[in-house]
Structures are given as C-alpha cells and as structure tokens.
Length: 311
Image (cartoon, rainbow, N blue to C red; front, top):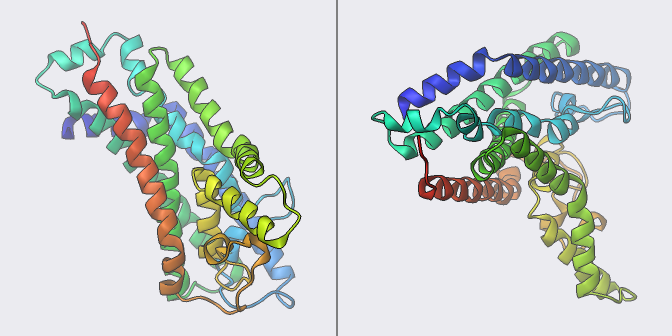
C-alpha cells in the first residue's frame, strides 16, 4: 500500500489538473480573505472586536464576493471529485488495472492507497491555503490571531478536510461502479447537485408529508424538527452548520438545530463560546461526516474486492 500511496501522491502533485485546481482554490481564497479584511477594517467601529480574525473566513460582500466558508462549501467538493473520479475507472480505461494486480500487490492495497493518497493531498492543499490566509490576514489586519482563534481555525481545517474527503469517497465509489471516467464524473457531479440543491426540497417534502397541517405552534415545531433531521443526511448542511458554530462563536444563533427544535427561531445568550463548548456542539457534525465517509468508502471497497478483473 505504501508504494501505491507514494505513486498516487506523485501523480496528484504533478498533474496539470491538480495544479489548476490548487491555483483556482488558492487565488479564490486569497481574494475572499482580501475582501473580508477590507470589509472588517471599514466596519471595525460597528462590528464586535472579539474573535475578529475568524471573521476573515465568514465575511463576504454579496453574491459576487462570497465568504471563504461559502466558497469552500460550494466549490471545495470539486477537489475531491477531481482527485477520485478516475481512480479505478481510469485504470480500467487504460487497461492497466489487470497488469497492476498481476504484480505482487494486494487488491485492497490498491483502493486503500488511492484513497489515502487523495486524503493526504486534500490535507496538504488546505493546510497550505490556511497558512497563506493566516499570513495574509496578519498583514492586512496588523496583528496575529490569539491562541483561541488558532484553535478554532485548526478545528475548521479538520472539518474542511473531512468534508472534502467525503466527496473523494463519493468520486471513488462512482469510479468503482462505472467503467468510463466520463460517466463516473457525471454521476459524482449529479450527487453533488443533489446534496447541495435538491436535498432541501426533499427534506421539505418529507416534513410536509409527515405534518400536513401546520396551523398550530406545536405542529410547526414538529415540521421544522423533521425537516432539520432530514437535512442531516446532507454533508453540505453538516459542513455549513459546523462552520457557523466554529467561526461565529460570538453570534446570537449558534447550532440552533441542536439547541432547540424551533431551529432558526431559537436564540442563546450573545456571548463568546469557549472551544470546549463549541466542540460539544460540533462533535455530532464531525461524527456524521466521518460516518458518511466511512460508509461511502466501505461500499466502494466491498464492490472493488468482489468484482471480477481480467487482464
């Protein structure tokens, strides 16, 4: 597996596709942080001064200038999809999978090495981007982040890597089930569209079916609770809820779906949460992201181990 891992890492880091994606994400991240820093400096008199460094990731300027969190949530999955959509199907199309397995290489080492190499590449990419953003933020704001802000950003880095790794697992799953890389890429993008856009309509339809009448307050609460529970199956929703909790610890509405069935109508005391308190709210999202990734990769692993491969 080590040989497969380092070979895939070399291919990822040396491919033009990876260089283009890295440049796109890095430049977009730097641009969003630059816009956020300008907005923070212009509104420093009216904005809260606590945890200002975290606002570099959450401050945007409209639809054309989204925040870094929004950018990662919407376009970040394409990194995982691009790294994994041809992991197995590409070997089939080049007719090299049979030759690879004819060598003294275990079959599970192939798919495990490819997945771990993709996850390591994603971690390296986001660590690099976060270091660039941190240095740029210190340059623009004029002071470094505090220890607590660094801790929050470190957890946000872990959540981002887990989120993109899930999409890597989705791409590898499609690559295992479909022989052509183009079809694998289309199916992966279709799943991204479903979890990003259509899951809200599905969750709302489920809630409407379960609670047809919402005339009373109790029925409205139950309707919102069912819709929120259905949305928990979407990694996009999990990532958004986790990042809101991590990067806005001074907000008056934090992790409302976990605190009350009223959802966006519930409020808590507008004081900054500590890292321990924040982790108590975020850990269900982390466990859910890890669980979704494990389930997705396990299905791909079982399918790959059982299929017939001929030279």
